[in-house]
Image (tube, rainbow, N blue to C red; front, side, top):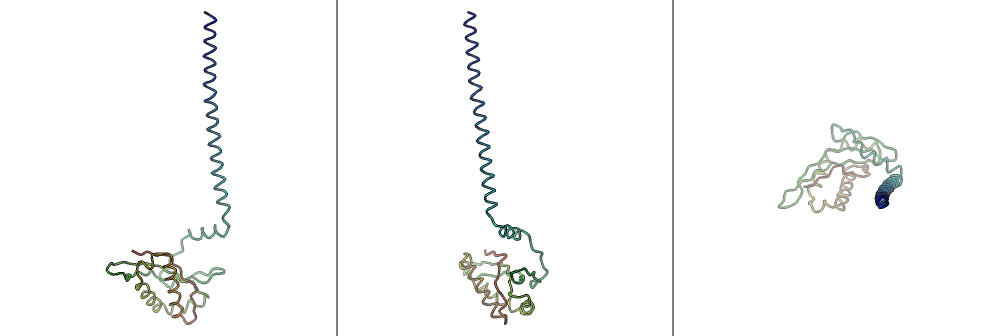
Length: 182
């Protein structure tokens, strides 16, 4: 009987040893899997971050920093190396030409001038510029300006109109900084 008890105790110890061993192995496997997943995520994030060039990082940082607001539309602009002078225009809010629906367009435009000397002419011609842009914007239908192609076409029309008003052809490009059609 003593031998049978010893055999039973040895069997229990053996079973207990087998039970603890798989649990320990499964925990180790879990830690390894989690560790590998974390390393892969960090490596992927690092690759994505390092893949961007320094010019893209600075462009993203410049987009996030808000520009100081000016009191009026023809506010003084800042001159950047390699780019023209940027001038702000007051926002435009117009009724679109949609019938029978009533739709609105709110757009804020910034003009890039080819030279800083042209700001004086733009400021002196501001009533003609605003009038021409109001007529152009209110002649558009929602379907024509809701697509990216429509917005690019509108930008080209704005440039064409402004450069006919200004004698020196001073506007290099126009930027939409706010564009809401409803």
